[in-house]
Each structure stands twice: as C-alpha cells, then as structure tokens.
Amino acid sequence: MRAVTVHEFGNLDKAGVEEREDPRPGEGEVLVEVRAAPVNYVDLVTFRGEYQFKPTLPYVPGKGPSGVVRAVGVGVHGLAPGDRVLAMAEYGGYAELVAVDHRQVYRLPDALSFVDAASMSLGFDTAWMALRDRARIRPGETVLVLGATGAVGLAAVQLARAMGARLVLAGVSRPERFAAAAAAGAHAMVDLSRPDLRNAVREQVLAATDGQGVDVVIDPLGGDPFDGAVRSLTWRGRLVVIGFAAGRIPVLKANYPLLKNIEISGLQISDYRKRLPELVAECYREVFAFYEQGLVTAPPSTAVPLTEWKTAFRTVAEGGATSRQVLLPTA
Ligand SMILES: NC(=O)c1ccc[n+]([C@@H]2O[C@H](COP(=O)([O-])OP(=O)(O)OC[C@H]3O[C@@H](n4cnc5c(N)ncnc54)[C@H](OP(=O)(O)O)[C@@H]3O)[C@@H](O)[C@H]2O)c1
Image (tube, rainbow, N blue to C red):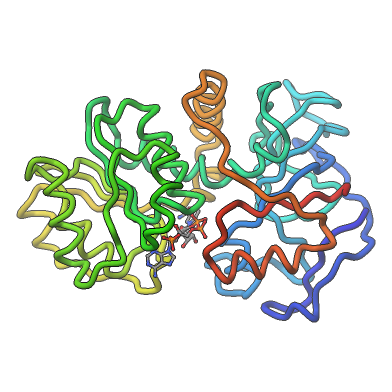
C-alpha cells in the first residue's frame, strides 16, 4: 500500500509517500480501506514531536479516517467487509489501508460522504465529550465557544445548539470569520481581536446575557481568551480546557473556582477512546443521529490527493484555512 511515512520528527524532507507492506487485522481489529483522512492541528503537533504521546519512528500519521471495511480480525462482531465506517485510528490514516481496534470503528449513515465524515472526525467527538461529559450541558443553558471557527469550535457551536442550548456565543479572533461561526448557528459573536481580552471577553459576554454570564465555556485556545472566559462564567458555570491554540497555557488562582462555585475541567479525547470506548460509541451515535435529523452538518472541506499532503499540512500550519483539509489516498 501507499502511505505517508515520517522518518524524523518535524522534518518534511524526511517524510514522503512510500510503498509499505499492507497491514493485517490482528485479533479484535478491523482493516479499513481509507477513502478520506482529515489533517488536524494535532497531526502537526505530533509530526513535530511536540505532542504528549510520541509514535515510534518511522510512523504513518493520520487520525480519524473514513473508509470501507475490507476484512475483520478474530473476535470482531457487528462489522463486516463492505461496511462504510469512520475509524478513529491514533495514527495510520494517511495510507490506503489501516488496521484499527474494532471498538473505535463506527458505521456511517448512508447520507454521510467519506469526505464529510473525515471532516467531522476529531472535531465532533472532542466537542461532544466536552459538552456532554465534562460540562454536563443541559437544555436551556448558555454557552461560549472559543476558537469557534476551528474544527473543534465549529463542532461545539453546532452541537451546543443541537443539545438545546438557549444561547451560543462564538469567540472569534478574525472578524472576517464571524460569518462562518454564524453559519454554524452561533447567535452572537465575542470579538477576540479586541485589546485587553481579560476584560473585553467578560464585557461582551455580560452584554449578551443580561449581565448573567454563561453556564458553559468550551476553550480550545487558552491564553488571554481563557483569562476573559473564566471571568465570564455564571454561578456554577463550567469551563472545559481543550487546547492552547492561542499559544499560552494560562494559570488560575484556586480561590477563583471557590468564590464563584465554578468548575474548570480538562478534556483529552484520546484517553476516552482508550478508557471509555462505549462512551465514544454513544457520542458518534448521537452525532450521526443529529446529522440525519439535519441538526448538524459537516464543516466545509477541501479534498486533496494524498501526494499533496505536505501542502495540506502547510495550509493547516499557517492557520486561517477556511475549510478542513481532507486527504484522499485513492485519488
Ligand atoms: N484535548 C483534545 O482532546 C483535543 C482534541 C482536538 C483538538 N485539540 C486542540 O484544540 C485546539 C484547536 O484544535 P482545532 O483542531 O479546532 O484547530 P483549528 O481547526 O486549527 O482551529 C484553531 C482555532 O484557533 C483559533 N486561533 C488560533 N490562534 C489564535 C489566537 N492566537 N487567538 C485566538 N484564536 C486563535 C483560530 O481562530 P481564528 O480563525 O479566529 O483565527 C481557529 O478557530 C488545538 O490546540 C488542538 O491541539 C485538543
């Protein structure tokens, strides 16, 4: 099979599309013919060798591809050759074939294309777990989603509405992208391009919530937006830390959660896949049900042949892409 193969962390000259031996499905594994694989921000961090988990070199990048089941290993039930699936692989998606633990493989709705499924993976499961498990969102609550134009943010905006949020505010750092967050269903914007975000986020949130603050904050940014968002929570509010795309890991004094009876929790989706696969399966059941009901849609995407993977990586690394980059191994 053809697969992107990385021989040295962070060095694009030491990585390329190579011929490799076809993987075989081990016990409990499913062999998937990959049709589409998303380029995620975390794939870049992993490629640079800066992620908390480092793959053994050489490795094939690519989390969360979609495709068709070619074969199943011993002990796999409920999946069969020909099934259209999303396969939440940790690595290996930028290839023609990948073998994945059957507990991380989810059958796709007929109406969901491979490219759209790949563009939803990692964003939607992360956002779902943050809202349902960490924030315990309830219908009628108010939500602030930071980084609302990113993969996680766009999913969180749509899912918060689908889960019955009364008001969804979108934190966006480039005003020209307000329209993208509004199209995903955000009721109003919180402008993250303003100076002094520690105060500016709070002022905007209070203005949008009759001075109440929000029940839930989903935060893939950290940095100054976090400083403002934590001060925008209402009494008993919950903030979920997902990432630090703004470039700084923020520090919080412990008296703050006490004074306002608020919760700050964190989310690491790959641990859920390992430790609570049944909850991730529940997540995809609901995400796909929302999709079939028209309550959520796949984010805009650009399909790119596997051979163009370095261009797709650079697009994501430069930031500002208006669509998800999705690699096509069979193109
Ligand atoms: N914990 C987990 O399990 C998990 C899972 C998935 C992702 N993550 C992390 O979550 C973060 C976002 O991931 P993603 O896939 O959504 O990334 P993405 O699609 O590249 O989106 C990044 C978002 O961050 C915003 N942004 C970037 N720099 C910013 C800055 N300096 N100030 C304010 N906003 C800024 C961008 O907003 P603009 O368009 O407004 O610039 C964009 O909306 C990453 O750090 C990723 O590693 C964590």
